Image 1: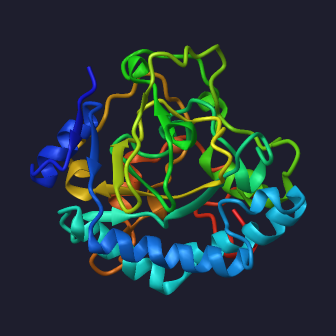
Image 2 (image 1 turned 180 degrees about the vertical axis):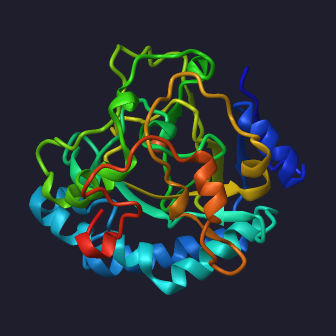
Length: 310
Ligand SMILES: [Fe+2]
């Protein structure tokens, strides 16, 4: 059973417990989320001017869209202002910043009607983020930047919460992915040939749960949830922000979502920084969750500024 909590007042520790059990939290807009969204809009709108970003796909060939949107992603992700605004968002969620480690946020654009389905506009088929070496204790947070509809939202597939499916995670090594797959996003326009650890058997998309929240609202869910990008048929490009958090006390104590079908090597834990002061993830915690070999030429932490895009 998956419960969707809206504006729950429970403390962060209890909320994390529920998230690790597969529940979903929807939180109303607040000044901190609005500030982050406004900043993202500023960058997106400056890049697409004079066009309205959500309609710009109808005004230009897809190559031009990629040329405009590609560079906005790293600009947003690594902007010092983004870091500050994100910290305030996490604080507004009621998390203890001295225990909460945050990954850099992602900025995504999902165009309508199959205009761009690869690279910078990659629409994810059903997946669990933990197949990409995310820790089982990872919590994902997702915010729409412009109004969304059911036809441009994301979907959860809760029957798979405790049901294993065959997937490519057993062939996935995070450090190899950092060295190869991630660097090439903007080169993929017609077809995405990056190796992704997706499902290897048909996934029944029903029943599915879609959550439509207003701009500035946030959806929180476990990285172990099977979820997907809804094929966008709204006629408008969907722009969204997502970011991830992990709680150090939970990592230390081994509290997390269950693992039903994930076998990848490596860990993305080194990507996280402490909310209060930007300190790196302690080595002993990384060691607790690291696995497999570190192959030659592999990269422990991906630096998107080197690739220019992601
Ligand atoms: Fe995901």
